[in-house]
Image (cartoon, rainbow, N blue to C red; front, side, top):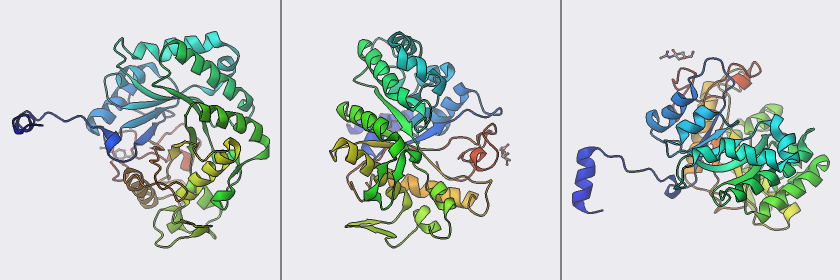
Length: 346
Ligand SMILES: *[C@@H]1O[C@H](CO)[C@@H](O)[C@H](O)[C@H]1NC(C)=O
């Protein structure tokens, strides 16, 4: 940039586009809509892009909400878009249904120059493995992938699914991570399909739930990224926080079924509730967890297993959602529905 241009930019107050790619790994947020008091989708996207000035460059949607998709096309935000769980059987059984899905929810938001809404992932269902829909996830992924290829969109958008830690049968120590016997066949096929497409598995990682299941033995400092000492020693790897340990147990499970270290994960959800279960779920603990997480991700530091991994991570969630089950489930938001911060984070 020449000095003259720099002066003009200062003078005119033009914002230099924010290229999150160069600032370590990407940080995102889950935009859940299970609340009857939330701002309109258009206002929410404007809130992320303008009020928060793209401080959070990535956003995950659980379903293809047209108003949000249209608003996103006017922004630089990058989108992980989910299909509804109830659409999985038809996506799995009908290539035509998958083609129509892409024509309805993806193509209209991308213009002829390939610009518009910046879709990065298309995720089939949310946490349906293990479960009755589990066997239909991979066929649905394949149909959507085929439909994206036909629409010439497959080089920009990767198809995947979102799994909970319930797919793991063992997770301790992290190197012993392995898929549970009842989903082993399904996860082996999905993992190999993702590997052949160079696509990540999206994993939900909740140190909070691990911690509250055994607060006598799991230290709060380990769960909140505050431990000064290695808490788990796994061979030559030292774990200072539970988040890294859970991520690496997923990685170990994938490596075992793919037979290669070259596997990819994205953390599609992580977070800590601010209320609903004291003394564990408090504003102070939620603030600590999410701020330490954010710093860890933005510093671009990997996990002990893969120190160079830039771990793309989506915090759960944007808002408190009053139509989720009562208790902590309603209190994962970093904002209240009136867009006031629950604690300083962004
Ligand atoms: C926003 O909502 C929270 C929680 O209900 C409340 O404590 C706060 O006062 C509200 N802020 C504004 C500006 O209305």
